[in-house]
Length: 247
Image 1 (spheres, rainbow, N blue to C red):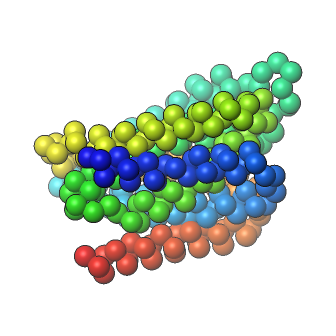
Image 2: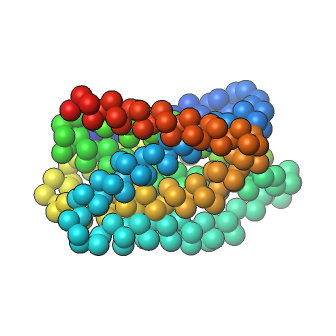
């Protein structure tokens, strides 16, 4: 369980790193867009091969992945709709920009997909006795631009640096605990039910990518965002292929 906790903490430590980068240096919109596009590519790969594919293998025709996928997608959608109504800038804060509008769905997406993702890390260690390098890298690389974008958005909405870093720390700790929970609490859970957890994460990630991360990366970086998305996908798939060749 300790190993799962530590690997989960490593995967989500990029939230703090991204927050520090955004709070300490001024990134151009283009650089932010390229980072987000690369992270989107790694997440698309994770959704396809590490979540949906494995969920279908575990489900044994139960239909749980379809249920979990829809639950994850609609959970993100309705939560986004609700929280967006609470996310107006404080009185006296600067007018909301595109990045400020992105902060709420981005943080929400990190929470909704981060907890199931982290549980998947723990489940993988439980099942294979080793961490999935592809999943670890995908979570780390995708969290980095998400945290950068979220931090910029929260700063534009009037959040202090201390508040932002505290939020990322809390989310990282919760996700690390979720990774340990995935290892310790689901050792006797039927695989069909585990497939629902994986599919839930996939649905939330895909909704966040489509509604927030990909459009914003294109807006900032233009057509080069597509190149970086493909590059991120290739890097992640290469890691998956390498892992498969070693097993």
